[in-house]
Length: 187
Image 1: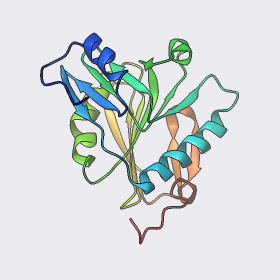
Image 2 (image 1 turned 180 degrees about the horizontal axis):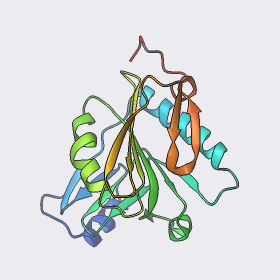
Image 3 (image 1 turned 120 degrees about the vertical axis):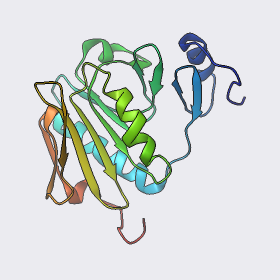
Image 4 (image 1 turned 60 degrees about the horizontal axis):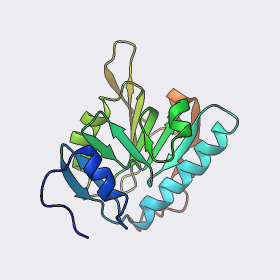
């Protein structure tokens, strides 16, 4: 079944989306089909999920990956590549997360502008979000935007650092482990 031609309410989208074989994001009544990811994308998501998950083991926080819906207000549902939440309601949900501390998007050439622009602007509306991270497999760049005490978003470019820091959850990962299995000459 294709993407609906008319605008949907959030409830209509959720009813429709839950019957679809593929993932589709939702923003202000419009539905956007998710394209398949490249191998390097999946590899980085798996690396980060495993490494962050190991460091968070026994803590009140958990890592979730691409198949999980994240709702922002009443007008957006996204499937972030990774999210970390410590929220009790999120940790009990079967379907929709609402209060992540950390969101990570692994960039691709076709989605990079969208992830950096509109998607980040929408994510910033989440009161719980403390850190938004962009990972670029092609350039091996990692940029984190962290909310400071004044509510402003500050860029931390870790691209030349030996370690990726997810400050809001107290985790750090050596860069070579983030990009393990990703041959820079093959991307």
